[in-house]
Image (cartoon, rainbow, N blue to C red; front, top):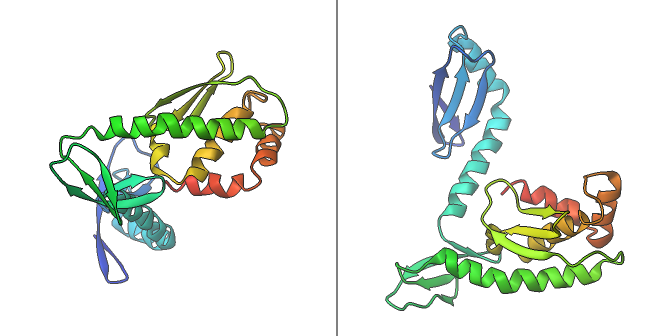
Length: 212
């Protein structure tokens, strides 16, 4: 089976499992549409389901295409740079280009940049809080499912290293979010009110980050 969208053709793969009761549709990173269902679901039923979810599928494809595009290149502070490999050991930036040695430790470079930048932004956002809160210890590491974590007991805020690739407005939002947990440990109305007091546009940034 195939799906045609604006002149582009996408393969539809049907995976039947005896343990699956319902039918699920998702778009894989290679833009293949995977339909997981049971052995009793007819091809006609699957076809109808795809037609009913056509608009949702288009959005799912767009999300995967955006992710693929974002994986091609070098990202730093919200900007995308084409990679040019050079013999120099230093990482240097040109107009829309970054010059990198193939043997460069990119993660180490990112972390070195993040140590200084994240601390600077933590200080800025911390000083905006009218309610006094304990100054937290800052840690930075790669995380797969969270942008930030606040340990209320130890007063440690951990920020995702991947934030160094994004516009600093998202870094600021995550910092405000985690600082607010030092006052409210849950996601109650009082918590979100505190976040909004310190960052009125937080809903916009929060929504945008869900698309990353």
